[in-house]
Figure 1 (spheres, one colour):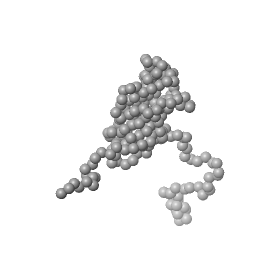
Figure 2: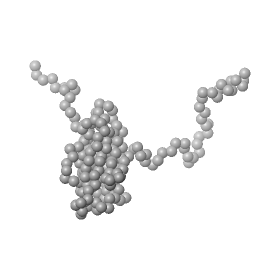
Figure 3: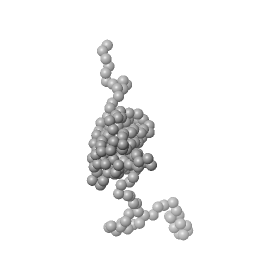
Figure 4: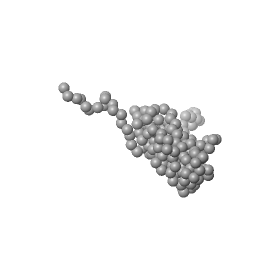
Length: 174
């Protein structure tokens, strides 16, 4: 009977070591310095342009997005955004990145729900025949469905409220 109790005690349980891990001992869970799911991803395309994935955003919110493009020798050092305005995405700053390439800062206004892709063009100020297209890809969720965890490089800088008659305190005069 003692043997049966011993076998029963082992079934269906989880056994943890009673010894605390030694100082400096490696843990069983390993994380990269920067998980690729937590940062804005810049992906070169086959045509020489770039796709920038900024993750989940929320409708009616304005975001600052900062990312670094790898060096594009044909663009040169003097780069500017094309004068073609995008109603939802605009570049606010372009500076040389300390590690090489270009640090791009832009503002994005998430207007509608869904998977959205906005484009901007970068132009060389020294070679008028050279331009690079940057597509900013975002998954935008409705403003009533929670708050997304923003990627590193994305920061909410404001929101645009729509008039919602159901939530208004305005009663009018009788």
